[in-house]
Structure formats: C-alpha cells, structure tokens
Length: 494
Image (cartoon, rainbow, N blue to C red; front, top):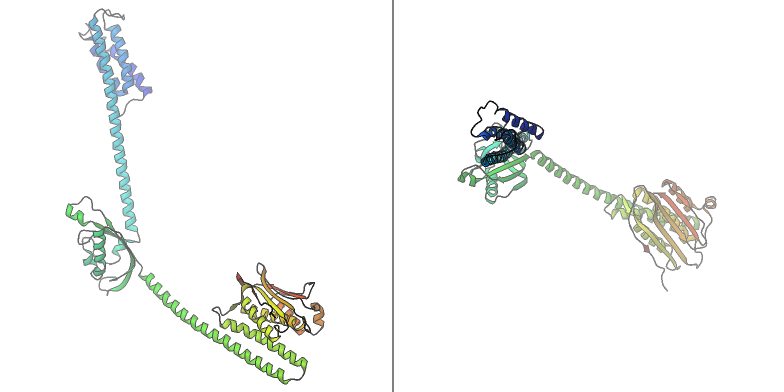
C-alpha cells in the first residue's frame, strides 16, 4: 500500500472481517494451544488498523476478542470464563487493538497531511517556475527596453534585447552604466543615486541624452521615456544588499520628439500665415467698405444734382442699399471671424441708421429690435441685410403718412431646427398685398422677393388686423444661434 493512503470504507470493513477469520484460522495448526492464546490475534488487528484505519481496526479487534473468548478461553466453544485472569488477557487484547487502531489512524492522517503539504509545495514550485518563465519571456520579447542594475556602481546584471539595441555591439552585462554610456553618465548617474538613496520611483518623459547609435558613430541627441524603480536585493551579503537594485524601463521617443518639434514649427508657420491672412481679409473688408462709401457719396451727389423727385428718390434708395452692404463689411472688418457676423448687432445698427435717415425721432416713430444672437455667414447676411433694409424702409416711408406716429418691430428668431424667421411689422395704415405690389411699381418689395429666392426662402405677408407684417423664412445654412439677446429703441420722450 502506498504511503499516506488507506483502504476506503467499502473495502476496509470486508478486509477487517477477512483478517479476523484469518486470525482464527492461523490458530488451527497450534496443538497444544499457546501459553498466551490471545497473542496470535494481535498481528491481524495491527494489519487491519494499518490498512483500514480506526473503523476497520476496531471492527477486527471486536471480532478477534469474540473469537478468543469462544475458541481460546477455557472452556472452549462457549462464552464462559473459568479463570478470572482470562478477563485480563481479553482486556489486554481489546486495549491493544483499540490503541493500535487509534495510533495508526493518526499516523495515516499525518501521512496524508504531509503528502498534501508536499503536493502544495510542488504545485507552488511549479507555478512559480511557470511565472518565472512567463516573466522572462515577456522581458525577452518586450519592445520596451528593460535592464537590471546592481551594486554601488550600477553594474548591468540583466538586459533584454530591446535594451541591448540602444547600443548595438556594445557589451553590457557585467559592466557599469558609466562604462557603457559614458556620454550620458553625467545625466543618468545622479538620477540613479537619488533613486537608490531615497528609494523613490523616478519617471521621466522626453529625457534628453547624448548617445551613440553604434560603434564608431558620433553621439547624437536622443530622447527617452524612462522609469527607475528601486528593488530590494534579497539573498545577498549585507554590503551588496545595502547597495540595492534598480530596475530600468525605457522607451526611445526620439522620432516622436522630432515629429512633435516639426509639428510645433508647422503650427507656428500656420499661425503666422493665418495672422497674415486675417490682416489681409480685414484690409479687404475695409477697402470694400471704403469703396462702397465712395459709391454712396457719388449716388448722393447725383441725387442732389437731379431735379426730378422720382429719380432723386430712386437714387437715394439705391444709396441706402449700398450703405447697408457697406455696414456688413464694416462689421466683418471689426470681428475675429471674417466670414460671419452676429446679425442682431447689425440689425440694431441698421435700423438706427434708417431711423436717422427718415427722422423717426421727430416723427415719433419707435423702432424695436427683438433678435436672437445668431451668427450668419456673409453669403446669407448680405441678402438678409438688403431685405431688412427694404422692409424697414418701406414701413418708414409708407406706413405713417403725414404726422402719424407708431411703432415698427423687427424680429429675428430660429423658428424651427435649421430654419430662421425675420419679420418686420408696423401698426401704420397698411399696404396692399404682395401680389398687387408686383403689378405696381414697388421696386423694394420685388427686390426683397428676388433676394428671398436667393436665400432659398419665402417672403410672406400674413393677415394683420392693424398695419402691415412681412415674414421672411429661409434655411439657416451654416448660421447658428449663440445666446438670446433683446435690444430695443424706446420712442423719444417729449
């Protein structure tokens, strides 16, 4: 039987009975009986206890005691005892079997515990060996450079192929850092001393060091992301253990650093070009505004030289249209974004200028602007500005004849996702619907309709109980809402 194992109960108890039978059969050749009749049962009891443990050993003991009482005690083949000393023999046999069974059971338990402990140690050793091989494989095939330094002079004890590639052809193991990298020693050694003395991990990103890429090549500036990790040095003599170990983990980032430097240089060049472009665009908008101002002056001069009232009014209207476009370029030249404006600010300034042209203060006409702060690109801002100019001009010229006063309300909002709505409403005398206006010679409204189609929108004139209301709906395009603002010009007070 193997050490530390015993028979299972299903086998142990039948074996116990068999051994008890064999114990009795072994006495048959004895004639006359032995002087100590019970001693022949002891080996079988011990064998049963050894193989089966406590239970089978006790079972064999009981059976052997019964057998000895019946077959080995006078008078034989009866359970009577004549000599009181026979009770001592029977008791000694029972006690021997019980004690032996208990001792063998404890021995088996000790054997099993020892075997389990040995198996655990073996499993742990195998696991540690597997982990060691895994770590070695990871270090060996890692793209990261890994080295182990030991001793007061930081001598290389282990390097992986990636670390060896930092200095091709240069032996490392057994040599010091100063011997392998003399050009970088002045940078690296103070850091290693600090890590070893303070037992703190050191991390560096983009550390610069002058190193050779191979034997015979001149040193060059190279950059590394690296970590120095202090490690305990177990299993060494006291002086060496005090010096400790340092694990070096490094990755060369020279190409990344050079690419980053090139990128920064390119960004500086782009920023310079952008600043130059911004100045040029501001100058363009400023020149366009000035040229439009010249055109406005020429139209004004021409209007002043013409005697006909109708022609003079047409020139003045054209003068105001050109002035509204010039106002757009004036806003563009004064903003950071040269391709879009906040239309609410422009609308406020435009209605103020129209109010000055048509004397709204003297006529007691209030112009109110309620507009969301929507950024609008120049390609949409100019048509929208001309339409606003025509609608407000139309209200100021025709809605309040004579000494009549009233209000003009301008509103700009985002009516739906991707759609803007510009409305101009007055509480004046009203005007004909748009269709009759086409048949009449209302040039302003015809211009507004043409510009609305250019914006891929529609110009409508809803029913209004008092006065006139025009609504322009068009696609937002690249326009976007920033915040909600409200501006208004209160009517002048007497």
